[in-house]
Length: 464
Image 1 (cartoon, rainbow, N blue to C red):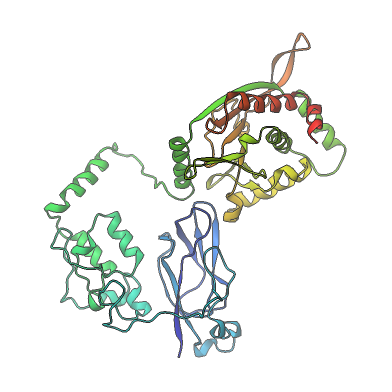
Image 2: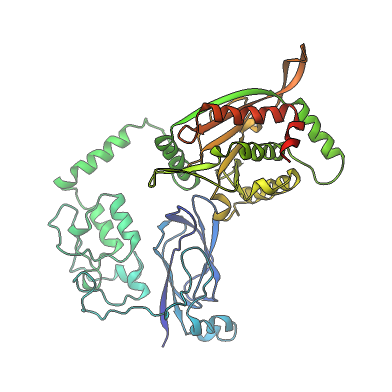
């Protein structure tokens, strides 16, 4: 007897609560092996192929391409321990799935828990579910899938009531998180609906019917608010959803501004000697060293002298936490937007190693193949906005870090050098820091040390 296993969207990384379906890699009826990727999703951080921990036959998919799903929502159901006759000869891996019912490695937050038997709790139809309400019967994929043919064929004798009608007491009979999200986004009170599914289960078609129904008085404030929002934009305006990478950036920057009392200091530095040093290093042979790598090496030396800036603030404990390693984030512009990959243990790397790691992570970022772990855990960020042809900026700290160094373009300018006016290669350095972790003296000392190393790279040799 096959067992139908429901595979839910797992936790794909730190702070991620939802993902958008980009492309399904399997169809209903396909045979899948344990840990075979079944769907490609886009999170606020990266494109990810999600492997399924079960092997068997796909019996249902939840969500169309372009749909956003919250973490924990159903992705697919798999019949474990069965095989369609046409597939018996070509899917031995899927057949063996019945033995284990799951893998155990896949992504963050899910996988087989071998500490207890892999069993699904079954509730008989009509028996009491937690909370005292009658439980819906064990749903087949056709019953669960919102908007499916089964939903369309549900008896018309139980029409959905528009929002604003008398609410039904007790728990709301809704299984699908997509149905809940649809109702929440459109201001529909699920307690005011009568579901057309088995035992009153509220389906997507019920919510859509409520949306098409004439608006009654209780819903008027919602409609008025929506109309006011729509009328605020002039005719011909384009609306762009604030989601994905752009939404994540907006949330993070807004949180940084809300929580961090930041301050910025800056200085112009003569980078002529730094550029000459880089040219000499690259002329000596071996892998090329980038300017960004030299600046990163300078930053790690400066953070060793001023560890206050390699820290974070624990608001719950009301403490400043100084971090032992420098996980250096750097800004990388991609077609999907601004990404900040992280170089782990940057303080242990040479300029040559940093160059190679920057190149590797940048290539992955532009290809949309960065893992969520590559984009989290940074302790200090280096932002080279000079590549855009600008001189200065006031960086916004990459929350929950304590500081960010911004680097403008290196450009030839008139400069007083050794008492005489000369044309030198000048760069502006900007440091934005969390004023809770240090005062201006520490921040100024950090920035001055960085500038001194830029102007005379020999200063850096003291720290090597």
